[in-house]
Image (cartoon, rainbow, N blue to C red; front, side):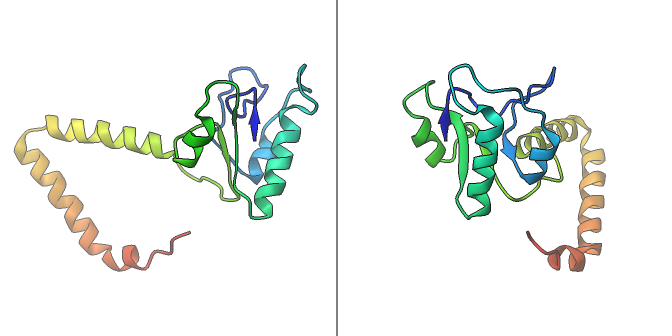
Length: 140
């Protein structure tokens, strides 16, 4: 769904744009009124998008005015706009996890070799100890 907004942005002070929107988001987000140029505002767009998702249609709300490649970018999997999903995200975003891994890797690399070896061996021991629960983990 192309609009004049880059992605869903709640009206609350200090709020950030939402990258992934799910059914819980409809209850958690406070929307503003109707747009001065549109007919229904972001709340009606989100309600329509959630209806589509509940009926097995993928939806992204993105800015259709910003550049000519918006649809191509979405099809190619680039993070453009707000993606609507029925799944809830119970943890940090993929970007946050990647950033945390980079920071952890840098901190590990800064340690002396004997400390790195101890940490890595401890992690390996924990993985071996928990191998059955790891391999039996159900994926969503």
